[in-house]
Every structure is written in C-alpha cells, then in structure tokens.
Image (tube, rainbow, N blue to C red; front, top):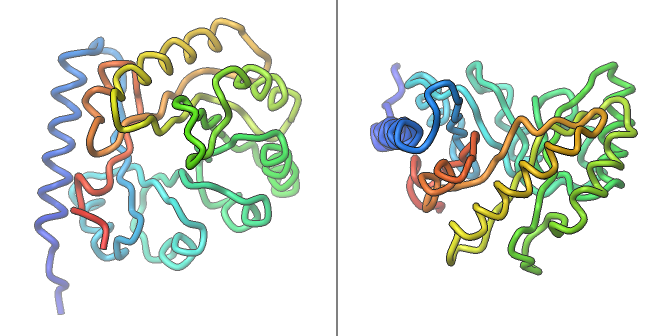
Length: 229
C-alpha cells in the first residue's frame, strides 16, 4: 500500500527552497552557494523521506537517540549533527554524519578527534559561537573563538571548517552582521588545519536575513514541517 504523501511538508520545503533562491539572487554573488538544511527534530522518517524525494539533500539532526532510531530508514541525503553533543555520545554518530556543527570546547573537539582517529577518518566540524552571550545556549563567546580554533588546529583527525550560531531572536540582523565579521576575521588568520568555508546561521524566522549577512547554510525545520508537537 502506498503511504500518503505529507503535502504540507513537501509544499513547505518547496516554498522555503524558493525563498532561499530568491534571497541568494538578491543578496549574493551568482557563483556563491547557499544550502538549505532540513531540520528533522520530532519529524517521522517517512515525512523526511518525502521531502528528500522533493529535492532535499541536507538534513540536520538535533538529538543523538532520535537520529539513531531514524537513520537506517532515511533515503540518501547528507546528514549534519547540529544539536548539543555530550562527549559520551560522540561515539554513536562519529562515522554517520558528515559534519558536527556544535563544537564549543577543546574537550569535545579532542573526543571527536580521538574517535575519528580510531575509525581512520577526518571529520569536519564547526565552532558554535554564542554570539548573544545567552546563558541558555551553548557555544563559545566570540572572544574565545580564535583560541578554540588554534586548539583544534593541533588535532589531526578533525578539521574546523567554519562557524555556527543561534542568535537572540530580537535584532538578529545585528548578530548576523557580527558573525559575518568574525567569520572573515578568523579566515584571514590562515590558521593551520582551519578553513572558514561554512557559516551556518539562520532558522525558520530569519533565514533570509542570514543569507543577506553571508550564511551559506540555513537551518529550517518548522518553516517546512510546521510547529513542533
């Protein structure tokens, strides 16, 4: 029996993909790439697969246990881990995701590096920046990003390839502008084993503004699937 298509999710994905393309055309150079990440938290794998069928290529996973329960059922797509990650959970995702967005300490980076070495792989990571200094959010304060980058640069099986942030909801463009400046400043340092290729910021409410300020990955969940249950 054919499974019913979740038309709201598919149409939501197509709408957001169109908006991303429009924002990219308006604010960015033609040769730049802006990727739409579909955030799958609480969404059944069947619905995620329907969005993959509609053209989604990049998934964002927030919770280790939820991802482990769904990953074997997903159709082919690139998966990044974007949620808070405890060191004792790294082993469960180390060889299943292409990039980890939420590295905010040398301790976590070291654990990723150690487990990647055991697997014989090099894993891409982003440094999570708490650009608004909010106690409720993870991430390193902007003043410590360079120190974190130099620390990661000494590790052999982990590659820092950009920054991620979740700014305060108020005046998000101000924080996006600060992140863009930080991204370019860090890139100009030419640190060994560090390349500023990815700036991951912007979610359902503000991804257009994030694209305006240099984001090349935007993370959208509720804008595609509706409000979380």
